[in-house]
Image (cartoon, rainbow, N blue to C red):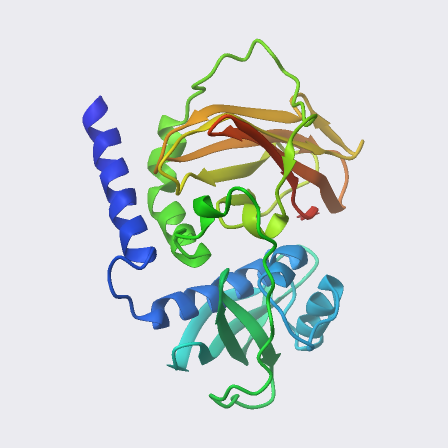
Length: 315
């Protein structure tokens, strides 16, 4: 059945062209998606992911995001609906208002009451896409260039890979749209004879570059004693394949897991692939997937880099 695969590749290629600047694009869709992704990360209890989408002075550390939203009765798992009620933008600045329907839950996860919480955002277009620079619950923000931040992305030998990358938010939409198909067709496309992820003699890649083409997404509603997964999505935006692509991480001793490393093998140009860690958490609380490390070869050179810890709430 090669036709569905060919069709999928063509669809992803068209999305890549649209996102890379080869065709005009209204930034409002990307701005709205960035806001919604941030709120979904807060709702999932993934404060590290939310913090990675933010550059400003409202939240100094990831935990301050969680605390600020909890003070507004927005706790993980309580978000029911998000509606963008207003949005405006210039070439490099945008503001948006998100009306969040939030449910208060009891200890058994049953809904007690619902409230409407408006959240006001200011965003800035940077080299790594739209980022959030202000978040407030008090009043709409002004569409001005006050408070803009400076983002310095370290130059690396693989900059050509990411310079024309689709914005992270468009990548996420593509993942949602093709997730069911890719999950059904997920296969191993490499020889698993070696189960070791070797980072020796590899050139370093900063996480700012990695997050543009790699996403680590935990399952929703992770329950102690139940089997769950953490998906690792990879999108190859370049014109050449990634070879010997592998991901490893450190899991705590509070989980039962057989394979700590994921081996993707070769990822063709324009291809989106996914593999998953499968494990059983033994106890409730926060589970940290530490030092997610990516290793691959590109045009004969070996690269390696590490992402931030992925925090998973276990019920």
